[in-house]
Length: 357
Ligand code: ADP
Image 1 (spheres, helix red, strand yellow):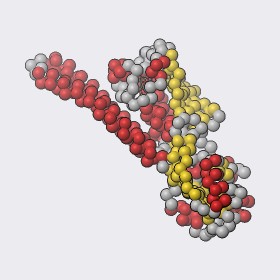
Image 2: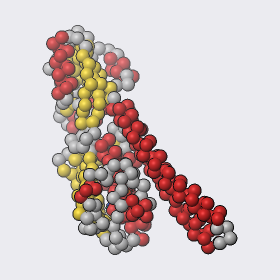
Image 3: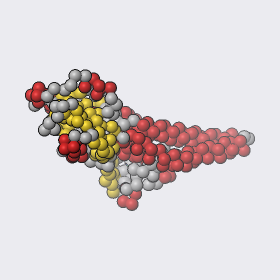
Image 4: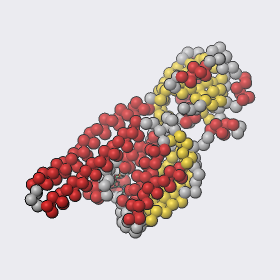
C-alpha cells in the first residue's frame, strides 16, 4: 500500500486540511491530490508520484491543471478522461478518469484519480488472443493424435513404437511449454505492475537470469559476458521483469551457433535504465524486424519449433516493457547477430528527494 506524501513543512503550515479528510481519502479506491491556492500540492497519495503527476509539490499534468483552473473559475465540479504516458519512452499509457472539485471554504481543491487503463487493456487483449491460442494448440494436439494412431498401428514393431513414443514426448513438452507461456502472458495481463509496485535493484535480477541460463549456454559452449555496473532501481513487478530479461537471454542462446558469445550490459541513460542483450547469432531479416514482437510470430517456424520456441517470448517482453512505462527495441543484421535493448524508467525516491529540500 502506498503511503501519503506531504508537501514541505513551510507550505503545509499555511493551510489547514479539514479533520478526518485524509482518513476518508485513504479508504477511497482512488489516487488523490489536495491543492492549496497557488496549486501547491498539500497532500497526495503516493500512487500519484508513481504516475508522475506530482513533482516538487506541483502538478505536472497540463490536463489536470486545466481542470483545476476551470474549477477555480467556475467553482463547479469538473470531470475528464486523460491519457498519460506510462514512461518517457514507449507506447504505454494510463487511461485516467479525473474528478476535480472545490473542497471546503479555504480555497482548497481536491483531485480524485481513477485508473481506467486496466479495464480497457484487458478487454482488447483478450479478444485477439483467444483466436490465436486455439490455432497454436491445435498443432501439437494434432501431432499427438497422429502419433498415438501410429503407435497403435505399430504394436508388433518395437523399434517404431520407441521412435513414435519419443516424438510424442517432444510434442507433449511443446504443449506444456505453450500452456506455461500462455499462463505467464495472461498473468501479466491481469496484473498492472505499477499497482503495488516494488523497488527492484535491476542488476540482481539480471545476474539471476544469467545464472538460470548458464547450463544451457555451457552445453552449447556459449559464453555469457556481462557488465552490470549500474546500481539502478526500477519500480515494478519482480517476476514480470525477471521473465522479460530471461526471455531475451534465452533467445540470444537459442538463435546463436555453438561457441559464440552473448553479452549482457546494464547502464543508465537520461533517467532510463538500459538493459542490452547482444548475440553473434543468426540475426533477423529486415522485413521481419517489425513483426517479431507480435504474439506467435516467428521468422523461421521450423527453427523456433526445434529450439522449443512458443512464439510468445518477445510479446511477453514487449508487454512487460510497456506496462512498466518502458520499451523494447532491436538492432539486427542477418547472419551477424542481434541486440535487444530493454529500457525502463529509473526509479528515483521522490520522498527522499522531497525530504532533502
Ligand atoms: P520463440 O518462442 O519462437 O523464440 P519469441 O517471441 O521469443 O518466440 O521470438 C519471436 C521470433 O523472433 C523467433 O521465432 C525468432 O525467429 C526471432 N528471434 C527472437 N530473438 C532472436 C535472436 N536473438 N536472434 C535471432 N532471431 C530471434
